[in-house]
Structure formats: C-alpha cells, structure tokens
Length: 454
Image 1 (tube, rainbow, N blue to C red):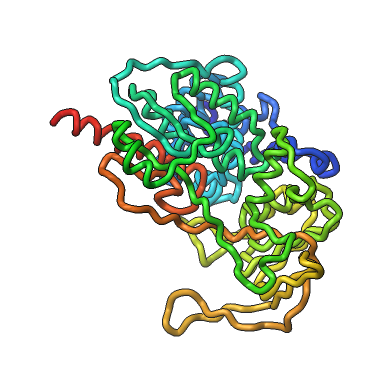
Image 2 (spheres, rainbow, N blue to C red; image 1 turned 60 degrees about the vertical axis):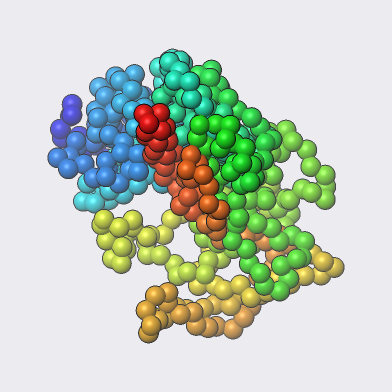
C-alpha cells in the first residue's frame, strides 16, 4: 500500500462513456479509458483493508488489494501476474462484470465511492496483451483426454484450467465460433468480439482444440463421448429463454431478446440474412419487456439500428435510487441501475403486466398492458399481484422479450460426466460461470486422479 491516505484525498474517477451523439451510430465499445497516471492514481485508493470484503464478494476470489498496489506502483506485469492467479479471463470481466467486489468495497460501504476495481482490471489486462505479458504455455501432458461441450465462459475456463493441468482438451461448440453468451448474447458495444478471438487464439496456441458447428446430444454424451474421453464437461449454458405465452404471441415482430442480439452480432461478423429473416428496429416503435441487463442490451441495439422510439417495461416495482434499506450489506444492493443504453434514450416503466399482443395483417402493432401492484402474501412466499389501473395499449412494431432463462434439466449421466456453469446452476453472471469452470476442472482432476490410483 504505497499511499495510505489516497482514499481520503483522491475521489473516485470513472473513465465514462463515449458521447451519446457519437456512440449510437456504431457498435464500437462505449466505455472509454483513463490515461496511465489517472489509472494508477485510482488504484492508489485501495486501502488494503484488514478484512478485504472484495475477496469474499468475488466468486473468483480476486486479490484486488494486491494487484491494485502493484498497479499504483507502476508494476503492470506484476499486477497482471497477480490478477491471472485467480482470473483466467480478466479482459472479459473487466468489461462486463457488475463488479461484486465494488459493492463490497469498504469505501463503497462508507462513502459510496468504491475503488474502480473493474476498470483497473481491464486496464491491467490490456497492458498485458500490449506489452507481451500474456505468454503461451505448453504444459507437460499426462496422457488423458477431456471433452468440454460448450465454449461460453464456463466451458472456456474449464478447458484452459484442465489444459494447464496437462490434459488434452477438445471443446465442442454448436455455433460457428467460440464464446457462447459472450459472443452471441452480449452486444459489441459492451464487448468487442476481437477480445474473444484474441483469447481463443492464445488457447489454440496452447493446444486446446476447438470443433465448431458440432451439436452434441445428451445421448451422444452418455454413449459416445463418455466412452471416448476420460471425462466430459457439459457447459451448454441456459439455452431456453423464458417466453410469454399470451394471446398474439405468434404475431410477426415479437421476438426473444437473443434472437435480435445474436443475429446483430452475426451481422457485424459478416453473416448475411434475407429481408424476411432480418430482425431490425429501424424506424419502429420498440417495446422491451424485461428490466434486466439483457433488456438493456436490446435498448442499445435498437438505438443503433435506428429505432423510432424505445420503451422498456418491468413487472416488478421500481428499485430505490442510491440505497435500499431492504437489501443491506452483505446483500447485493437492489437499487435502480441506469446503463449506457438507458442514457441513450428510453421510456422506463415499472409495475406493468403484459396482457396481450395486438396486430394487423399478422404483424404486431401494439401491446395491451396493465399497471399492477404487489401486496404481501398471507401464506408467505412471493407477493400477490393486484390490479392498480386500467389496461392501456403501448404502440409497438417490434417487441423483444427479455425475461430471463429457464434452468435446464439433464438426464442422469455416467460418473465421468460433469455439469458446469449455467448448465448446472441456471442463469447467472459471467464471473460466476468462470468460477464454476475452474471449480469443475478441479473436480474433474480429482476424479481422474482417484480413478488412476485404483
């Protein structure tokens, strides 16, 4: 801790976003970066707490005080080495993690201004790639083979960890490129796909094998892969989105959020779609149903496609601003989140229930909704929904359903098959998926070592 008083004298400074009038015309990353001096000064704000709650809050157990101190002292390579010990892909989490560590930061809990851990993490990793601190490793092989089904953050983390342990790892991916949710669910304006390509190239040079356009069934895993490989990891995420089966659901123009997001990312990658296949918000009134991050991503995408207007509705109440006494520490603070996409222009409404999709000539033209409220359930559990106003119609030529994902169900597999990430837990954060990948790799290693010792 080079500057023990920095947290008293240096205010939190974020890099911020590109100007709205500039960023809504392209899909480039919206987040800017600080200069080297400011970044190191931000790292100096870390107090190296006696009990650093950031360690506890981070699913990966990142040692933020250690690499923040190295960053403050200008020891960028050392900062990266410390970061890499716990996080295999800091270039991903440094861009899209909600920074659980920052909500646990003592500075946040006392002043509301946490250390800029997420931005520091991204800056360290970009310097590492720029200056060659990211090196290619060639571990000694142990003669055993592991298959990983799915190349999202969990699958990639498991594959990399097992590769470093000496296993020959083959990753099977149903799509045309690796990344899973990172590539097909997160817009380029939050995560440029070259960042994924760069990491995949490193893994390939380290001998991880990737097989694309390979859709593997549960039956094939149980009968073929589990017999061919010493172990199999299923990291297929949560492929089934939560739908809204109400009247008019079959109208054209009503889509699941990932249908829009994945197609737009493929378009940016050079793939072509016919006019009938193309999902676009250009010149349309857009309604996003769902108030989470996926809904926000739809808003930003709609703006860049040239939407006429964007409205987002959420069935739950509006969270408080800044502080929520109902979710005190150590709970995650449920407070109002305004993203870069919201800043670009969006009508946001809460406590709205969707009743019916309306249309003409087979295409959606509006959505009938109703204000509602929530009251305590006498029997306990989920509160009860009650009507709080008359139904109304929201005009919309494009409706995007962003209401989360269903936890997948799996058959019983042989003992050498392991579930990993969202495929095991249901939809969660990228950082938790990476942590699950590392944990699953350790379980596979223990299992194969125990089998080999018998």
